[in-house]
Length: 326
Image 1 (cartoon, one colour):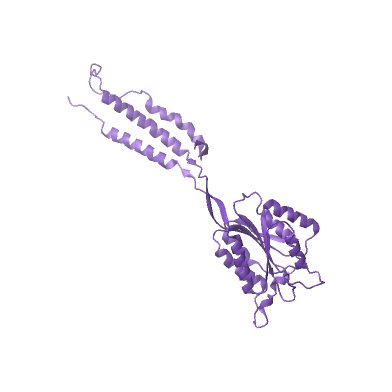
Image 2 (cartoon, one colour):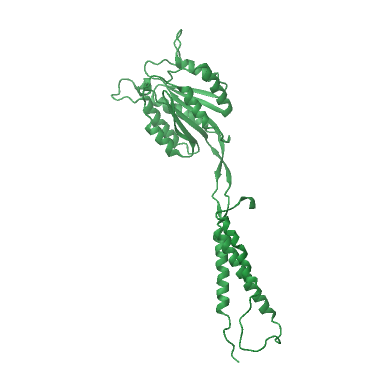
């Protein structure tokens, strides 16, 4: 346990030799009597004198040590629960401002894909207290919105502020690499999931494909893609024949990486909610995590000990005989 002992002001410990002062024989109170050497020895008085000197020494030592503010490290406590480490990768390209296929023309104000994604993901986070979340968004380049941590407010603020913006190019590879970087140097205590919410429409170069394969393997992470299909965008589940589409190419590449992979194609807000519920079911696995415990302050009991010793000395001084009557 002493290996975990720390001092806030260790230089104050140089005052510890002062605690030896009460042990020095510096004399005693004198009385108006010529001689006491012939008196018989008083064992009780000797013991009392030794105890009072020890009380003085202990009080000074306790004050010095307490002033140095010692404390013990709190350490960590390993807990277990249900959940996962999830990094949300949200596509904010211009096409995400378009409605889902299932929005139809019946609604005067059809919900945009990115708005539906934000709403459903926020609800998903609030129903998953055991998960740890991080977030990044991307269009032409990735933006790290929130690191992987227990700070839900930061991720929720990132989701609420994400807006679709067209910049003519979508770069999912760099966004996925940034999401995987969140797992670096973290102990593997829970399942790791990269949750990609995108309507596709992008390609990944061969060089980037090899990097992603290596990163997914090294981080031991799985990929879940929620494909938000809009009007005019082809289906991955029922692709058109004799036509190469970017979304299908992405799907085939993700499936060939060698890491766990799931894809959900959604065409409505209800389908998006169902897909996110399935994500919750897939990631509801046992998890282990470490909780940091608060440090133990040792100064308070030492101050109490010093106060008790000083109180004993004050009481003994009050009981001391000032004069003897013949």
